[in-house]
Image 1 (cartoon, rainbow, N blue to C red):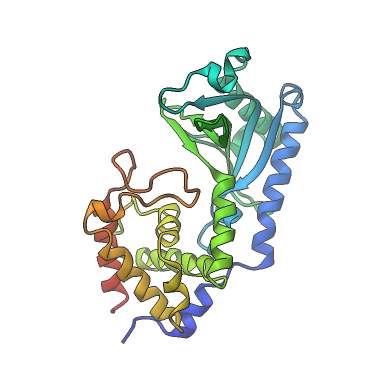
Image 2: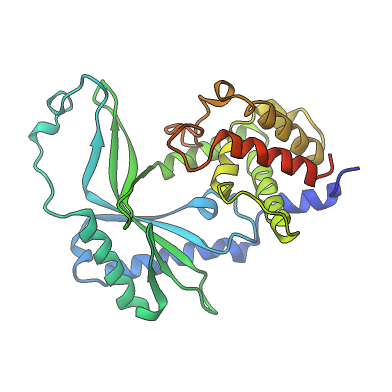
Length: 298
């Protein structure tokens, strides 16, 4: 008999309350205010938007922090395909920016400190955190730059790029992630995001029950794994217990060997999910799925 009842699983698939969802809007608003009030940043071209679980509407109540991307749009990094030069896509006519990413992150930190106070703002390797209090949730502000992934015809996908304080470059495509998640949710009778919440919630339950869960198994990874589950698994079964069980079977069977999951992508469909450059490995995922199966008493 399964560990959790269908009633419990159904409850866990639901998003947090409207009050919880309003936290994202409030977080975006207060960060925009900090930027608009700053004398240096008000003259810069930026955009501010939510990313991560809250923005993707796959958060569960245990997701206590919100991610806000503040992207500099007055310049950009780029990468060209093989055998393509800057002149082939018109970049040779552009001048470089005199404003650096490091300056931008420093300016964002200064603006947040001026808005909330030094004690309320913590600079981390990847982000700048605004501490939670009685009227706001903890907010991670990620300063990024525009990043262009060019194709041979000169078109490009627009993403975000930033460098950590430990000198590591990070590239992601948060807006494509949001759009593709919405699309898959529609194609699976609104079950993609529900099943994603279910996987995330059960991971928290495992930790709360004292299990040692591999630290590389993050919420983002779980969302991308569910993304790679075929649509028919969402639609061909009548209960959440069975959808959950079949998703685990599919993911476990297809992470036994690298060749079966080598082409899997993030939700953005612009970065590979399981390759050598990732912090998690195929074995990490496969071992976790086996642990998950045992925990659920399937």
